[in-house]
Amino acid sequence: MQSQFNDIFICPHSRQTIRLDLENQRACAAGADVSYPIQDGIINFLPDVKDNISLSYDSLSTQYDAYMLSDNVLWKLINRITWGFDNDRLYADALLDCIPDDFDGVLLDVPSGTSVLTLQKYRRLKHATIIAVDYSMGMLLQAQKNYREHGIQNVLPVRADVGNLPIDDQKIDFCLSMNGFHIFPDKKKALSEISRVLKPAAHLAFCFYARGKRALTDFLVQNLLYRQGAFCAPYYNEDEILQLFGPGFEILSKGNVKSIFYLNGKKRQGVKNIKTEPSPV
Image (cartoon, rainbow, N blue to C red):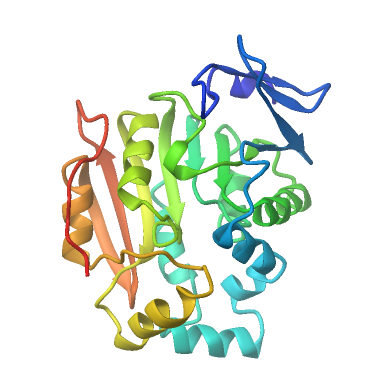
């Protein structure tokens, strides 16, 4: 695993190259007395962070797979009330089909969550190098358990902030982001960081909550889920989403399932970051 990820990671503070010291379970910044712990195979670039967002998803991590799969009557009911459907495959498969099974580049999955919706796809991506980034250590620990149970060995879980990715410029061939954009506190900064780490003409596939598609979902997101730390304002409608992504990415396809909007895009030539300023309400 160490050779797979050489020259990809950088220290989020010093920007120096990171080398993995698996013997001592540390990720060390070159030329600096800075290192980060590796816990259960997970690089933790945020060892001291315990805020509302991370704690909220830590507490949900052991139930997250059941929630996403709607695998009992209670979760089915909750998802039908909140989202108007109880089958996340309706949009997940549309995104995952954007990644060919013979893909052999570097894939960034952010936020990866527990990877419950990507496990079957990752089993087929035998030649890919996959970096699974999440803000919640609890989510990553559950993801690592899922990878091991499914025999997936080419994924490196990383705890990091999408607004300050510990990845060097233009190292990523494809970025997958499922149900994450609505969580990012600074969405423009997150998109700029993702653009920075993507190679020229690299692809991305996103799905996330879009405002204005379903009134009950809008009410619950903005009055309940926001207070629980599961969502972060601002929330964009479809036109604002396209305005935000458009300058940096050619939109190849888009769609929605109720309030979940999804898109597949390609990074425009010469673009390094995203500066568009839509005005969500």
